[in-house]
Image (cartoon, rainbow, N blue to C red; front, side, top):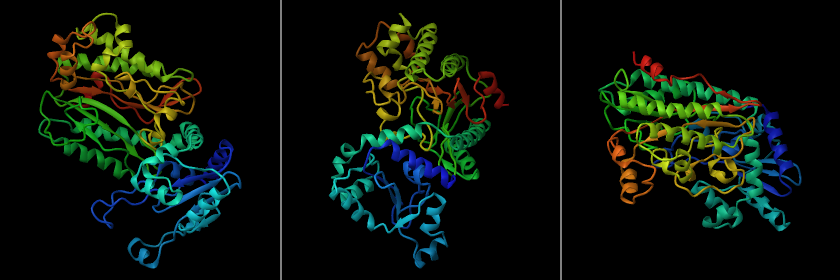
Length: 460
């Protein structure tokens, strides 16, 4: 938890950004795995955490713009709760820690919101991403569950995004910590990856690093010999010589800030010759994108720079042909790179994705519908204080290759005969986390090996 002044100032700024009305914050509840008393690991709503700092279930809060009031709604533990959970501070105690004096029972929330509406005061809500939030909004504000997204307040969304996109010094310190723990997770995998071990064994060891550091994982671990599947959460394969192993994993600190790194390594002591060629192309794209980071440049341009670098390398190897810039503009490179070069980060690994990429990564502009480019989560002009990932990769996805070849798609740019010989290659990427500074960028956390020589040196 940060200082009370930090949370007080965040809420004050929010009141200055929204013209009038009541801002509703719904905290998260416990989510049972298979019965009530056996819940999943609790994770507080990130926007609630950002403005109110309380990492407990069963809470809600209001920022009253018109009256300058901040109110936390919740119920203190009963004696029976204490028997099972132990003694905890009261809500008033917690309120003092985050600069909120007014604490009210959870049951009083509906009456307050009803009164506000009766006085024709707007009640601003954010887009819900949990089913129970939709049901709460139905109960509290008579908003049908299927209408809740449409009822979300754009004014509220943009005010939250503007604050959370710009990381304060105390947040940057947490993000540095998250990235360094994440680096330790990847170093562990690099040392372990060898023939005979299972993906599950490495994933377990990586998870242990995050837990031992006092936090959690920021997202389900991707630990796979099938890197061509972008979000592969299956861990049932056994590593063998000649495989490449891709790890995409990040730590979450005790305050909820995320790290997100990817690394690709040979299972054998060294990469095969063809693995080296493809790996170097992706690394060249990564380094070109990183070197271009600075305030004022649209991240879309950085993405297209990475795509062009990839396409040029793939053309040199005979996978692509024709004019590289024309191929990228048409989207032909997306056969090998169907996703984006990076995304915003913070309290969420894809920061504020629940509030809408249009607002977070595009500053209110519409996204492209072109395959590949439509998956770019960040395109807006970069500003000091932004924290983001850089993660271009190359992926040989057999099903996508078969579909595009059958459709004769981009024959003028793609040499499918050459591509066919690499359908069993898999996929790879490197990913790092960066802070945009006043005059450039800074790597967050400690570096991990990326060059072919450094990665192979980790293998001993």
